Amino acid sequence: MDQGTKEDYELIAIHDSKNERSLSNRVIKWLEMMDGESPYQISRLQHSLQTATRAEKDGADEETIVCALLHDIGDVISPSNHSQVSAAILKPYINEKNYWIVLHHGLFQGYYWMHHYDEDRDSRDLYKDHPYYQDCVKFCAEWDQKSFDPDYQTKSLEYFIPMIKKIFSRKPNSFV
Image (cartoon, rainbow, N blue to C red; front, side):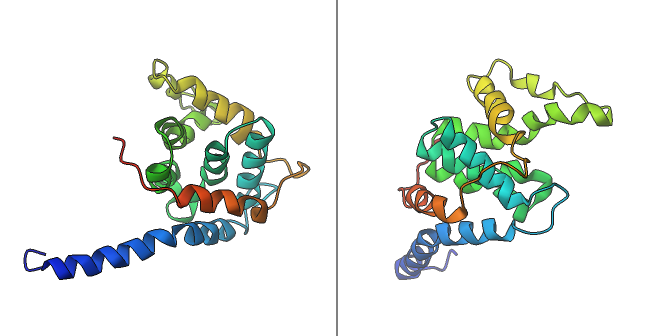
């Protein structure tokens, strides 16, 4: 890279810009990949759609609905740390609160299952003094953990596509 010219870096910037503009299409394809075999009564895609539908029904804003839809998108890339992957994909386009919730939702969901494996279900309490703690508890309690219901009336992926495109068309932010 130390041999690169300004012209070289301008070509890279053009390429990166095109790549950035197509991110929403890749995200949609990743969601579609989640519509397969699952250990649950519904697919991972249906879980995500159900979570987003619940968020919308509760009056969440569009960004939060998209975060609910994409909170598990990291499963396609790395199930072991899907929360961190999902949060990293969303981070440039969302506010700090939604980023924090997506980043930590995996740990907070542990409240519902960790005790079955002799783990501390209250591990999330490490963050109990964080300003977004209660928001993440609510996200998990009211939307995420409930969204495995095969009988729940869920909106389609097509319904959410304009929201996805709108969020990913934002100018990337750079909060720390």
